Length: 154
Image 1: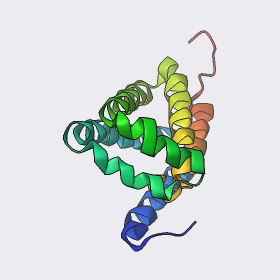
Image 2 (image 1 turned 90 degrees about the vertical axis):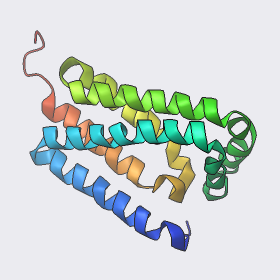
Image 3 (image 1 turned 180 degrees about the horizontal axis):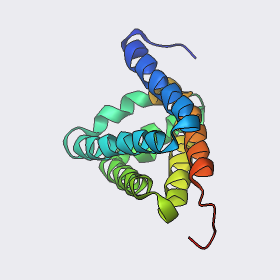
């Protein structure tokens, strides 16, 4: 995986945030939960805005994909329907934010959504700041395990 010059700073910042969320998850799981939630609070409106103003911007991620079929998907179906795909992604991100923010009985849904979403973007490689997706998925699972109610009746 070659890191293009223009992605170096965002890549480093993203992975520093991911590592921070992972480390914090062990001692302060609610802080990590909110960090993950806030990431989606930012991502959902950002992707909605891109979907409505400049959806073709995401076509550049095709060249960063780690697997050929992902590149083909971005250049084909995704590219042909970028606005719709991006709005669906943003909706999913909003649901992840809400469920992570609510916590409690909704936390499991947020963690599952987080892990599915991050697994789906992992093949973008540098375009998804890989291994950000793996690190944050692990952090969210730790959050879920640490915040699991002691009494199942709760």
